[in-house]
Length: 426
Image (cartoon, rainbow, N blue to C red; front, side, top):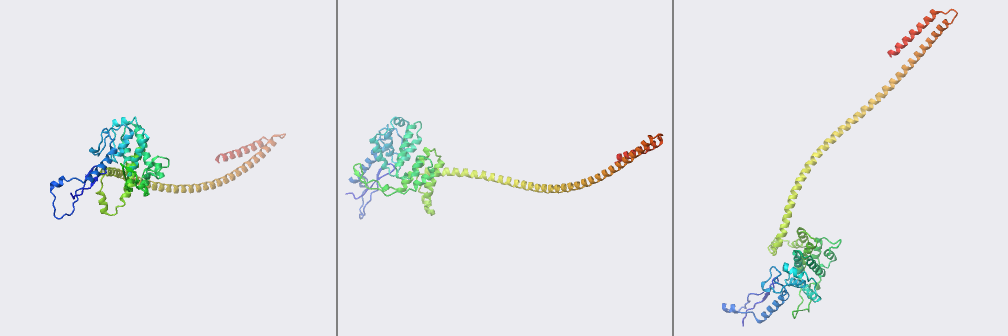
């Protein structure tokens, strides 16, 4: 009997089966020839396990066609059956178990005329959806729909299918997340919705596969689903959903994932050795490179913007200083103008008061002069009238006295001439 024990190991990504190195018992100084080790074969029970696992792995994948391209497929697991219906494509997508799904133009032409799924197919498809406990497939279906060009009905059918799968999954049971998936009014923003999915708490029954269901003739035992892995897969799927349905930019997707997934995960690394171990344990380097490139590009853009903003701020500060100097100068000139105005107003007030006083004095003098003139003229007129009266009486007698009249007239003329001269002299 061969004492070596070899354990069958199945690769989750490809479904390939391999055996571990032989585990030998501690037998005292017994050597085994190389020819015997090379010719040794696994026990019959191991062969049965391998056959069952291979049959289970290839049963769903048996409908995949050569016309549909996949990345990372195991060549031995490819089937020769072509995909001609929408139902077969979905079965094939779930058969890939989270690997990339790609559609060629011929397959799109074939399934474009048959987008309805019969009831029997929906029942079988629901079993596959329930079996995808880690929620790996819907994201690949969405990414495949993003690459389709010229077939809007197929794209819409794939998105509708993924939306129904998401709404039925416990990771998206939060009403706010549901409203975000349906793009309703007052729905949370993408980063907030992703954060709600990562913060979701599951009951134990939600994380256990149902026991008692038969799978290929055997009953499956209860198996606990990795909650964190499922939440990350669901969050990534929701991020792709926002990118597909809302045309969300890659930078916005990266920001949302950073807020919801990457930053909280990095907070757990509290020491340098933990951070170093996490940095050197990254497997999907392409995604990390893209995220780093986006943040690097944004950092460079922000640095350039900061330089421009700094130059603009310096220019504005210079202009502000110049404006302040101009303002101070204007204020100084304004103060001087106010002082000059106050002085002018005071001087004008004084001059006006002086003019008023002078006018009043002059008016008083004029009134006095006028009264004197009036009195003198009146007195002169009265005297001249009397003289003319005497001359008139002298000329009216029986014997007119001409010399008296002449004398009186000459006196009147002389006095009037004197008065005229005084008036002319002012």
